[in-house]
Image (tube, rainbow, N blue to C red):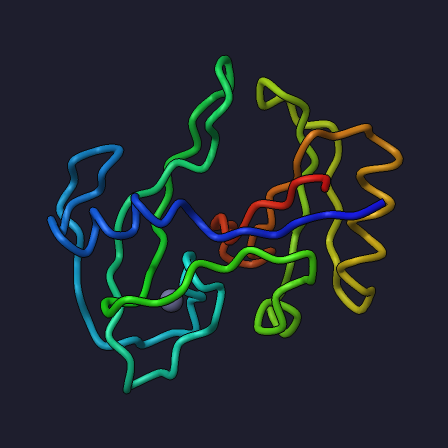
Length: 153
Ligand SMILES: [Zn+2]
């Protein structure tokens, strides 16, 4: 089974950079020099702390009708970067504490698993196979925040 990992929509990130507001909620966004690893939710790369500028804003990752919104704080690079979209698990996310959550269309949670010392690909395969999920959210196991979405391909 194949899968595809993607960052948040590029148009949404562009709007954040242009308006310095959350496109989904209108809350002010906040620009600062990175004091943590992130990652950037668009390119899915971790930040160079103390060097790269980033923008903090409120993001809601569910898009299917009927799903319960889960707004939370996320970061993107302040300067333009390229949206991640690939059939390969993002290299920078491998080093982070990962929680994978499997959902069916409509946002019902079907299963979740901590990656820990396993390979993310193996956990993804198992979750998709065991639950029949339509998509998976990658979250930070410690902070809880949304990092990326995985679809079957
Ligand atoms: Zn970026």
